[in-house]
Length: 205
Image 1 (cartoon, rainbow, N blue to C red):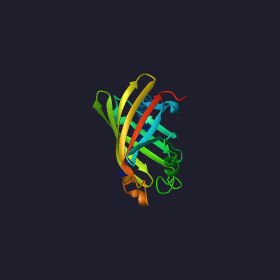
Image 2: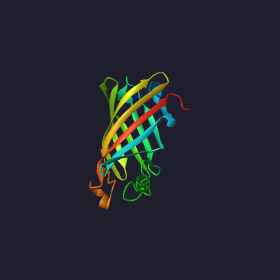
Image 3: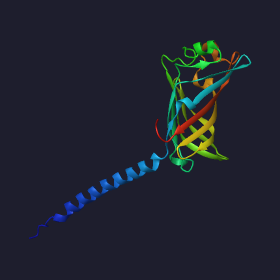
Image 4: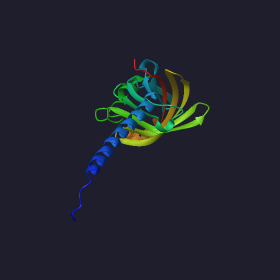
């Protein structure tokens, strides 16, 4: 008589609470997914490019990285959940001067045998006014990762189409691009100017 009896409803209540918790987690994940699906953009490569400019012996030399991919989640009304990731294939470069094309992939510069790609992962967006924005993220070139900022204009933002143009200034020396005799600025300037133009749609083509 003095022995306490277990409450048969206690186990049922705990099981029910766990079940309800799982349902709540599923509903929340679906809500978050639904909230960000409209923010996903798919780049159209034929209308996008990443170019570069650098001073060589007092003359501006330019070129482009023709092969790159991107993952874009962006909404100017929801910058906190916006993010971008760009992967650039450094093994393919098109430049005004042939020697630039031929030398940049080599060991003293990008060393594509060991570091075939460059990446930019950004998630700190800021509205600057007049359709101007910035995004700060981690840029990785060779074996160096540093915080860099892309400033861009939102040229178009519609139901199914978005276009931006942006610029980023970096120092090649910060990333070890230009080893040995090329690590000075007597021949090649340290500043590299990146020009970015992206066109994207909400639906993948």
